[in-house]
Image 1: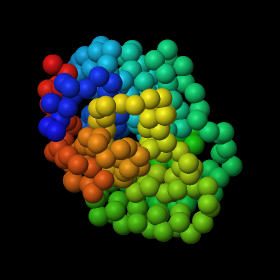
Image 2: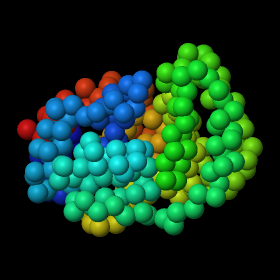
Image 3: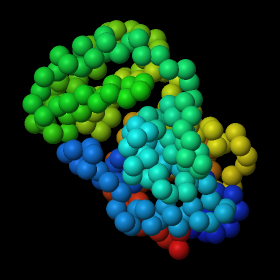
Length: 242
């Protein structure tokens, strides 16, 4: 069934949308990647329909999510599923917090001293950013970091090769887990999920085959629809919302 026809015929809908590279475009400075007025308007319009449950599922931290989207009547997920914020504005951790692993991982990340790179610390993650690096140098260093991190062989950790980032976080916290929070609450007859990188594969794979899984950028075997960029995704959501 075409996506708009499916949307109009449905009565209980779920939207799970990634932030960076999906809802908003990338910037050299992550703090500058702010939602446009159009993006905010679309989220507001979708969430105003009582049949819709809207959540932005991001790798960002709680503070950033509050600052950028906190005024909207939607649910938010931070740090790839570590924290969930309900529509009342309260944040809840989804697993016990343990950070004993961070010093060893930080030492490895700090060994990659490439001009333009920097390390971001989250509650349960460390991220090495290289979007501002010379491309070849950044990719080369990222590959070495991934090898060194995997040699740690810590079973509670996972290493993700994202969009110009290398991210280390704990196993059992991912966007698929976040999606299950809603899937366990009832039957949705329309589900749309959108994401742009490897962290969104967990989200796509957690959803039923009937869901509309939208990959932003390069196609994904886990998705059944591809759009070129955040602008095209917003056009798709606007068509549904109006």
